[in-house]
Each structure stands twice: as C-alpha cells, then as structure tokens.
Image (cartoon, rainbow, N blue to C red; front, side, top):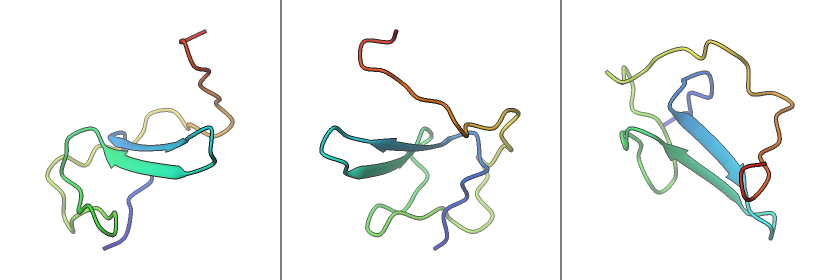
Length: 60
C-alpha cells in the first residue's frame, strides 16, 4: 500500500538515531510495512506544506 504523504494526518519523524518513523494520527494505516489504505475515509489534503519544518525536542 502506498503512503499518502499529502494527507494532513500523515506524520513522518526522524529520531536522534536517524530512524524514520511514519504514522497516521487517525490510526488508519497498515503497520508493517507502513501504508495508507486505498480510499481512506480519513484522508484530508494538507493545507500547508510541511517541507522545511524542523521540530525541536521540548517544543521550542
């Protein structure tokens, strides 16, 4: 199953050990391998691109 990276519920994070973690805020994904279900009822397009954003530990 492909990953729908333009969905607002899709999250990809990189840990301090450079491990890539992917998840769905709604829990609608297939876990191994990670993928979004075809025709997901929770799909909502992103309103703003997440490109270039960096989230620091501790929130600031």
